[in-house]
Length: 355
View 1 (spheres, rainbow, N blue to C red):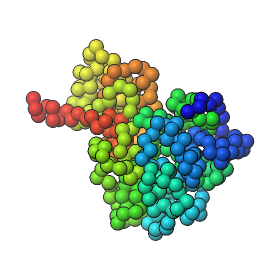
View 2: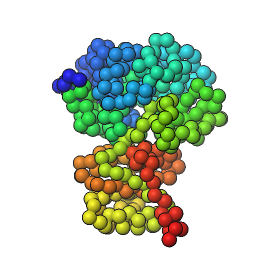
View 3: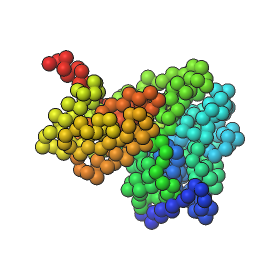
View 4: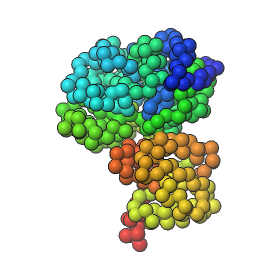
């Protein structure tokens, strides 16, 4: 890959910089890459209908080529060109949650290259709610393939600086719209099976999908460690979001969780701790990071990836995290944490029973 001068342009949603958006659009239409904000995380965009442009995304990220990309659109009428058909379930979900943090999987049309879909006959599509993203998509040709703008396997970027850390020299432009709102990637719903199935949990929960469709289910492979299965959606197969230090999730009654983590932190190793406002004062040593409040799920979601990146800067050797069983976003938060931890989890209740 040739080294590029990576430019960062700050952009204000209240007063759009048309020149910056046109510059981004020109790069995308010319087959280049642009990083941009969405309400979920920062995306690394390329023309989704150009197989060579999509290949550049995989190269910049170091992403496995069988890991499908999501095509982002700005207007609902653009959906018809890239899918074989739009089922009624999709129209109902779009009416409820588009624009927004929801991706739907359809049977792809012939104009979508296999280089974008990871070799699959299906295509993942999303319409982001972020105004910068949608304006850039329109100027870039209308169909922008975009995974998260990070090195594959690293924590997803929630600020332009995170993108710069991973993509400096690899892409020509980063649009800086500030910190993202949600901080977790979109929910993914597969509409190509008999029952609508959530392949990746996110802000739009299973219950929210069921409210619209009546029937939907979670994919049983969401927490599978089987690497032999071809991924049906982005992020299903490969380890993601991982900090450099080994991360373990500690589950069980909270007082026992705190006691277990404190025992591990009181050692010669440099230990990182992920906690909440409710438990912050109960930890005695280690590199302690408060991720948010259990009374505000969005505060936890929006800080998760940034905290994991901060531990890399701190040089800790091990990280212990509390688990998060919150009503709406808990499943999505735990999905990301489990992938970051390589599914390493400790149940302190089982440890006590053994004693």
